[in-house]
Structures are given as structure tokens and as C-alpha cells.
Image 1: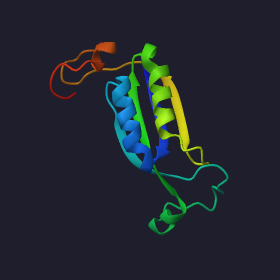
Image 2: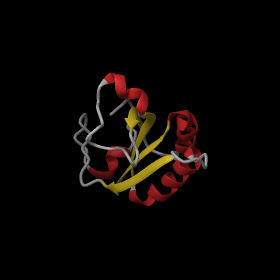
Image 3: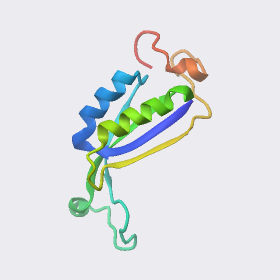
Image 4: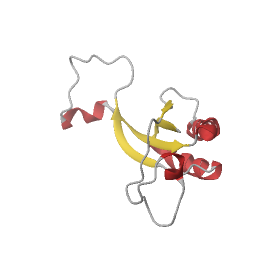
Length: 119
């Protein structure tokens, strides 16, 4: 299994979700985050609410999928998020060492299957 984690413009989330659904992504987690990107001075950076205006609001999209599906999902996500303007975001792909469905105790790839209800 693979974990796909993408940081994209919040204005592109609806298009990304549609693209992920069309390509069969098993589930999606979306979070609003604030990114500082490259070139910031870490010693001058503050998490104070008054400083949030300096940070770009982006959305983090996470998908866990079968390894065989990862390339198609990444391609669909990146194509839907792309505006060709700096700041479009970034996608990370990494392995998932273990997955356990809490309700059923199932482990491995079957945790991605919808067996009725929610996880």
C-alpha cells in the first residue's frame, strides 16, 4: 500500500476530489493547513495568529491506496491541481507499513475495501 500526501491550492480541492473519485481512490482525507513554502527565515517565523496572513492557506489531501493504483491516483491529483502558476503544491508518495481497520480488526489491503458503513 502507498500513502499519497499532497499539498494543493484550496481553490483546486473540488476539482481534485472529482478527479480522485473518477480514478477510484478508496478514500480521501482533506485538511486545511498553512504552508510557508521555500525561502522563509525559520528564526523569524511565528505561529502567532497575527502572522497567519503571511502564510498561504493550502489543503492537504491524503489517500492510502493499493501500490498498483498509486501512479494513476497521483497523475489524476496533479493534473486536477495544476494551474501552472508557482505555488501549485507538491505531492509525496511513501509506503504504508501496516494498516488496521479498527472496527473489524482487518489488516492489510482489505482495510481499503468498503464493507458497508465507515471505517
